[in-house]
Image 1 (tube, helix red, strand yellow):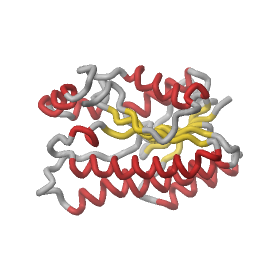
Image 2 (cartoon, rainbow, N blue to C red):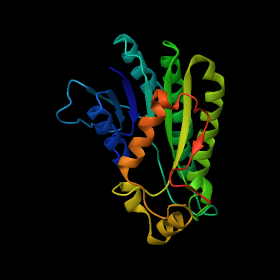
Image 3 (cartoon, rainbow, N blue to C red):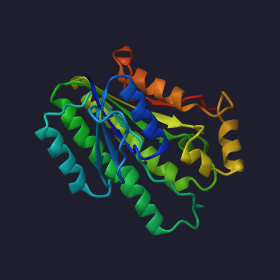
Image 4 (cartoon, rainbow, N blue to C red):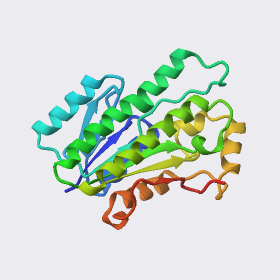
Length: 234
């Protein structure tokens, strides 16, 4: 049985992915800021309360995984913090909050994930990034910058760890239907995002899950260090 770690399982995408992989027969370790139990999968699911701003919290998680002899086969990073603010008015507090979670905390988490995977010299990571890194829509400067920064870290980690059989890729997600993030978008911003994608439509959660499943599988063994935009962007 393969074991996958999914961060942000209390969010729409993370929760869907956790249930998707549980139904595929994976053992899922879920990370969230609040308790997120998934009914009917008590023997295949383990939830940890983790604050990405707290390095000791992350280290304690991996200490527990080591004590349980849990080796990770895959990691999907969905946790993140977003805020819309025009670049000339964004506060230092908002910048710090976003970068603490989306960059610093995410780097610490990925660092520990890769160290865990190095034990078995195998593993695949899928980082959920954002299409805002490509289309430069108003109000997304800080959020998009944090996503680009972590994408770059992921690419460097992919380069450094390819020889150990570890693959790391990022997905710049566009608007995804039936998600909290999508519901928070204004009509103008959603239209701007869709008009900059080739498919001109919202993606389905099932489509995102299927893409993640492929990237984690041996069928994608030659894919690493890539940043992919589902639905295309121009």
